[in-house]
Image (cartoon, rainbow, N blue to C red; front, side, top):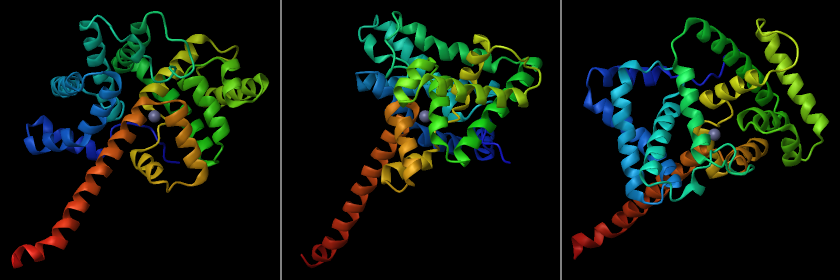
Length: 303
Ligand SMILES: [Zn+2]
């Protein structure tokens, strides 16, 4: 079975290689591809659109500066979002955090009380990133095994269209919510949630023999959350978000995508959706423009 691990694609690798040797056409293509979704994300976090544009610009600058050391452990989009988040934190800090309510983390903001120190929450991902990007052979091995195991579990749920269990696992691991909160959100009883969690962890353990049996340590769960956040296993592809926007998805996929975007409120996917909406509006504009031109150009000659 082909694993849907969210690493850098061959096409991206090829583009990056061209950028690394200074090909400006390739760089322009790259900026064009990611600018819109990053800007939508920044605008959802920062009030002034000038601040949002600055943060996106600085993100691309940081990206160019770190390009030589980028290891391609996660998708480019995820890496760019993590750079942008740090820029947004910088902006907040420089403004003395006057609008704290906006920096709740994407995964928990809908369900949890905001942390007393909002930076605590948003600081998480950069710590994760440093753990994730640390070059360490032993850690790499562990990380790869867990990544594959978790990916297999999630792919299995998707392929069998078991979206209820997927949602429960997603709330437990991606959003890091407690069993009782998950039970409330999904309207099932606590025991069911515990059972589904147990089944999932058991499957992961079967993949990864080095993890000893026994009670699940908090550290192990945190590790799974980190991996999920970096790999974004449950984030629909951009093309799926596009189909969601057009309303052409199957009922079950539509409902699941709606849950991910509108209930969990995954800000990365929301940013993509916003960008797709803008693109589509632009296309409509262009279509209207050419329709008007086509229908008027004849009269223009005669006039
Ligand atoms: Zn997502």
